[in-house]
Figure 1 (cartoon, helix red, strand yellow):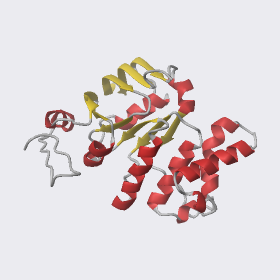
Figure 2 (tube, rainbow, N blue to C red):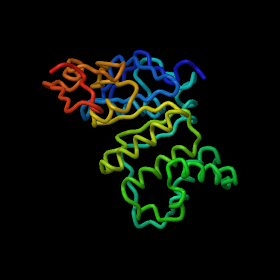
Figure 3 (cartoon, rainbow, N blue to C red):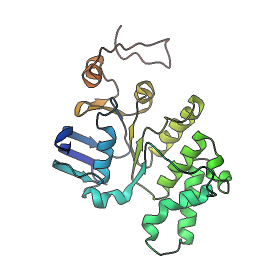
Amino acid sequence: MAKEVIRLDDIWVHYDGIPVLEGINLSVEPNKFLGIIGPNGGGKTTLLKVILGLIKPTRGNISVLGQLPEKGRKSIGYISQYTLFDRDFPVSVSDVVLMGRYGKAGLYRRYSEEDKRAVKEALKTVDMLNYQNRQVGRLSGGEQQRVFIARALATDPKILLLDEPTASIDPNMQAEFYELIERLKQRMSIVMVSHDISAVSIHVDQIACLNRQLFYHGSKEVSAEALEKTYRCPIQLIAHGVVPHRVLREH
């Protein structure tokens, strides 16, 4: 595997002539967990779509697993910020996860036994195998999110992109979610967009602070100054207690 699974060099993106990403330089190493934080409208989702090859940058170069994004995305599992579907539609958990194999099955080809085995393995990974015959619309938000992660895992990805994956699940399920991500990190690189700065700072290996420009990209010990530049408002970092809370700087 290449030293960097994702590399962006001087990436610019414009919408109707207005810049939404400006001169982004970013790299992701194998088996690392990168958290991207920043305000709404700061370009976080756009950045993920650039990596997926869904948005072509105005200028700059990008490689995914040493290839152009259009080819490299075959090895990417992606969970979007909004998953809208009819909760009364009679589709089972296993059928939803099987959709993740569509790219490998191809048009008009039946799903194989290998595809079905991949579905069961993905559901087993997220502890949802016992729910395989349930109607997905009858599951809780946290359970549905596990199903969507399983759908992404069914592609056997080398990279997992997550856009606000904990927005619709309660704190208990969030703790289980991050435990799952910790296990998955042993198998793939993970890039997650999130507004939850505290959760990101605890669980990720690296943080990127994005608001059209990249104001910080490095260890998770991000400073208040970098956050102020990113959010463009006064920031105070507060720590409570001792272990397991981390003090980011004296206050």
